[in-house]
Length: 306
View 1 (cartoon, one colour):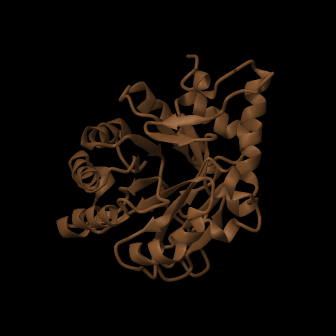
View 2 (view 1 turned 180 degrees about the vertical axis):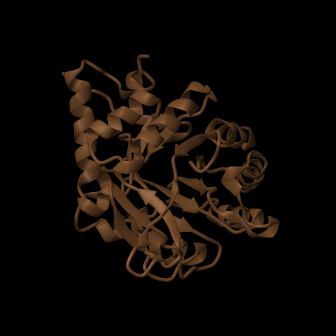
View 3 (view 1 turned 90 degrees about the vertical axis):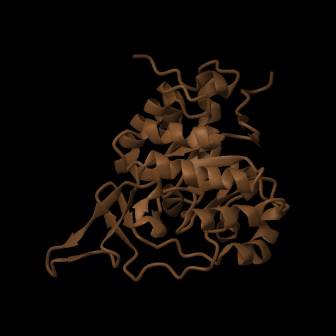
């Protein structure tokens, strides 16, 4: 008798299983190639890619805090052209979906990065990081305002026919308003959440522990926040598949997100602790479905009882 079907369809994007690696925690994939079989992953979200190369923020870039880490790497990356020439050839050989996380300092930056990825063999989709400041409009964060969200997502939608995922910021009053703006602009998939912003202080020097002062909080501490936001967006019934992100360390965590309304998940900082985490989570999800008589993982999505 065949086991449960844990394959997932996110709009036009088909995954062999619902577990992807999150952008910023898995490099360009190759860094983990000697630790795990990358072909077993549902998908790989490569680190944030910009129009031009970026050196990132000054050190310290990451500190450990209770329940996770606080980091401000500054989106260090090689830029879209070098990504295509130097990083993609390795990824192209893998039997896994490759999704490129993109960001920019202006709407035109996002548009141009997406345009350059259009039609490139090996790229299965793009994930738009809208948690960046719009330098041309006073530094307002794209993902904190529905009008800014609409503009940037629409610009990417106009630039590419690739499956379009939008990564939502938790640093908002009502995430469903932002989610709706992204959907109306052409998003096909919503991933959430990006990192809440935090601060850590060295009490001896009375200085911030990060070189950039503040940073993104990741790890188990943010899971309840992420779960709540996934559930809220699912309840809003926007008609788009959701991808849950935030503090996923085990299959139990991943299953909670699926019950809350996510069709798939991304594993982030847990990969730092154990590179095998994503594969262990996949096995755990399959076992849970088998133990509970769930023939298709889709039947578990959004089944929270309240």
